[in-house]
Length: 248
Image (tube, rainbow, N blue to C red; front, side, top):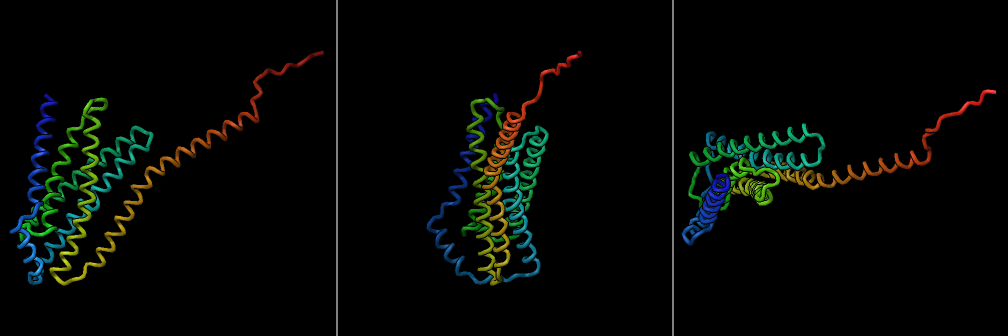
C-alpha cells in the first residue's frame, strides 16, 4: 500500500514538473509579448501598489531567500552533533522553518495573483510560477520520508536534497531578477537591497561550505587530544604495584 502511494506521488510529481516546464517554455506569441513588456511604459506607483510590491518582495525573500536556506543549514548541522536530543531539536527546527517558508510563499503567491499583472510573459513571473509548484511539492516529499534501511531511502534523500537546494538557488536568483524588474519598471534604485541580499547570500554560502570543514577540524582536534593523552600515559606510567614494607 505504501509502495503504491509512493508510485502515485512520483507520477503526480512528474506531471507537476511537466506542466511547470511547459509553462516555462516560451512560445512565439509569448516572445512577442515579452518584447512588448520590456518596452512598456514605466509602472506608476500608487501608495497601495508600492506597499503591495514591498510586501510581496518581503514575503518571497523571507521564504526562499532566508528560511529555506536556514533550513538547509540546520539539517546539515544535525549530522555533526553527537547528542540525540540536539539532532532531534535541529530536525524539528528544520521542519518548522520549512513549514513557515511554505506559508509565506503561499501568501506571496496569493498577493501577486490577486493584485498584479499575471500574463506570465516575463522571466520573473515564469520562474515564480515554477517555484510555487516546487515549493508546494517539496513538503509532500519530505513528509513521505522512508525509514532508514528501506530500499527507496537513498532515492528519496537525493530527490529531497536536490529539490531543496534547487529551490533555494533558483529562488534567490528570482529575487535578484525581481529587484531588477522593479528598478526597470519603476525607475527607482534597488541597489541597496541588491547589495544586502548579496552579503546575506555570501554569508550563507560560507557557512554551508564551512560546515563540512568544521566537522573535519573537530575530528582532527579530538584525534590530536587522544594522541597527547596516550603519549602522556606512556611517559608517566601508573605505579600499580604494591609497596612492600620490610619490618626488622
